[in-house]
Image (cartoon, rainbow, N blue to C red; front, side, top):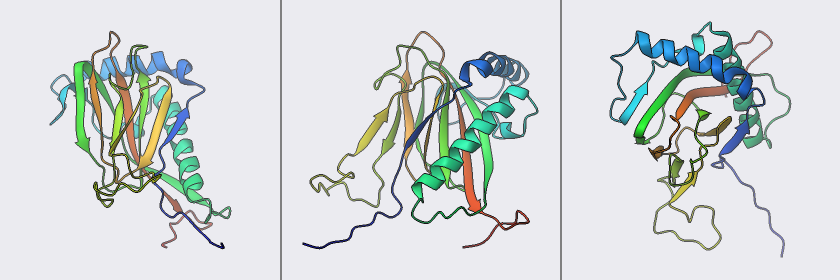
Length: 214
């Protein structure tokens, strides 16, 4: 039997570990404490029992936030190249962070299922998460893409699972394509759960750094 099978537009979910996490963690926690003191009226919108910052933190001059931005951008680059490796031939690329924000969860805090627009890739970075975090306590979950009917239970297909949960591990970051519906389960641990999220696009540029439309 001769055959040829290629995979296009896979729904990859990557986990990246920040080697400098504990170097920047305390500084970022101080940044967050000061931010909350100056913005005490902010709430979590439709989500429950949490504090959510504005979406422009990637523009911050804080040295530790800048180091986090560098790690996030480099990880987005790697994820985009890996997921499109059959098409990558050392083209010049640029990573544009559209948004970046933090969420501080209080006891039982959670985020409703949602997806993101105006980007290609999304992430969640676990700045702080207790050792009691597990798949049922504060995990990030992803729903099966809606374009794959739920009644389709093809044997061995990676699309035969309706939802997956991924543990919140401090100092690591998850990256996924923007169309995946996701959220977080309530966190009831002893240590406050704090995350950063970002939306990004990775695109090809010419020698002048200008975007090349595909």
